[in-house]
Length: 329
Image (cartoon, rainbow, N blue to C red; front, side, top):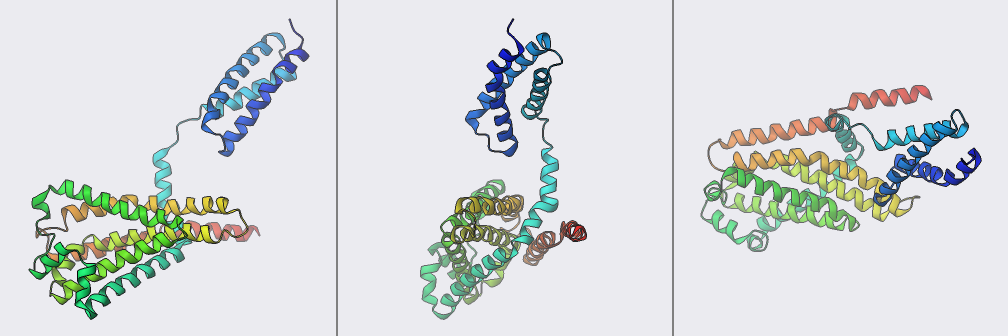
């Protein structure tokens, strides 16, 4: 039988490597390709522990291996995470907290969108011919006929398919408004201005042709919430753009990762609200089942509740935490 010194000298390298991999795992720096190596080293360590327990019980090597294997077992075989609890915590404090911390970017996004809205409306109101460039031909024809282009939408496809298609389109616009911020914010600004110009032009053209109320009847139910989400996604894109342009004292990649994580929280937080908006746009907004004033009231109520949630939820905990930190000083 080999001596304790020879056993330790022969196996020490693997034990140290296992410790390094466990430290990487705890810090979140473990790469996918290292998982197999971690599992292999853990199994060898458990064999070493059995060997030490049989031939070197009570020694430092035995105690070290017992601790090492226990730590590795706890790291590898973690208990299942409470996913729903994490989701609830995110919407109770995480999402609204990030929104309030980054509200200046959301405000900037709203201003850019409103600038595009005003520009599109002004072009059509001042020069009606501008509608030919800014409003699709099918919409112009429907407006000229005093008929909403959305009137027949439910006769073309079932409401559930309409809602699904609308939700997909809204998600595409939202993600693009966020992701294009990587182009130093230029992509986000273009998306916000472009959407604002198109919407402003359509509103102005409908107003000129005395179609304002039918338009409001259609967009009233889903528009306020939908535009709120797009503006927030635009704010997230501006956060990414600012990180690209001005990383401060940190390396650009590190700062971009940090700010990108916060921006992603804003976009993910909006996801269920965006899906709900698609349901409203598919089932309630088209047709005459619901009166126009009811749709408008619903849209304003939902948007008001959404912004109230973002502004107030979790604020008491933030104030308490801030007061606690001040007291410790």
